[in-house]
Every structure is written in structure tokens, then in C-alpha cells.
Length: 165
Image 1 (cartoon, helix red, strand yellow):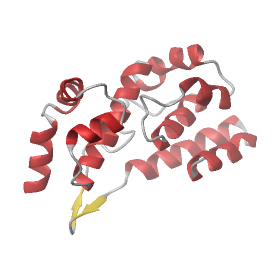
Image 2 (cartoon, rainbow, N blue to C red):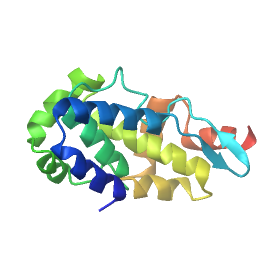
Image 3 (cartoon, helix red, strand yellow):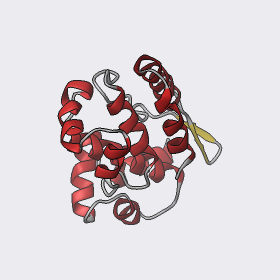
């Protein structure tokens, strides 16, 4: 269990208002992160969680997002288990996503996976195909199509822009 998961489980005893306030503070901390790679700072225009239309109003959605962000592969994580830990059915959780973050559950998971891939591409010299497969994409062409849809550039093109800039 990651440290983040442990902390989130400890706050379950707080009131819903206190939980929501704390979750929003955590989201603010995460979204203000800067990555330093090869002696240069890379500030992402879309840091984790700032791609949502607005901050979630349901704490269970906020908690799920934080828990899924801590998973190596958001697409392959056990979503039922995470929902169970949050005391909500997966079907109900899926229903809450569009009204809370402006994306469907599936699109949200893809976006989080894309953000994680994008960060790993900039931080490492790892092969793009390996990164895609590690984060739950079935094949490189599926990853490339999804990457282009979210970031308007292919993964190689994006990595080259980051390396040269």
C-alpha cells in the first residue's frame, strides 16, 4: 500500500466537509508540481488533475482520483476494489464522474494514464512503447492515437519538443 493510500484511509474518519477540504488542498499541491529533469525545470501545462472542468464536489470521486493517481497503471488497477474501499459501488462511482469532472469514468482513466505517461516520457529515457505497455495500453498504435487526441501531438513529437526545448 502506498503512503498516499494509507493517508487517505486515515482521513476517512473526518466529516465529509473536512474530507472534501483536505482533498482539494491535496489536489492543489499535486497540480502545482514542477518536474526537474536534466538540470531544467519542466512545467506541464496540464499537470495532474487540472484537466478537469472543475474540482470534484463529491469526496468519493476526489478520493478515487487520488488513489488511482497513485497506481502504476490506472487503466489496469482494480477499480472495484478501490470503489469498495471508498464504500461506494463502482456503478455509482462511474455515474458521478461526468457531473463531477466533466469526463466519463473511462475518459478520466485514460487522461490520468496519459498524464502519467507524459511525465515518465520527459523524466526518463525509457522506450515510448515500454511506457505505453506499462501503463495499460494494449499496443503502441492505440497509445499513439489516444496521446494525439489528448495532446495534439504524437508521443515521439512531444518527447522531441521537450528534449529540444
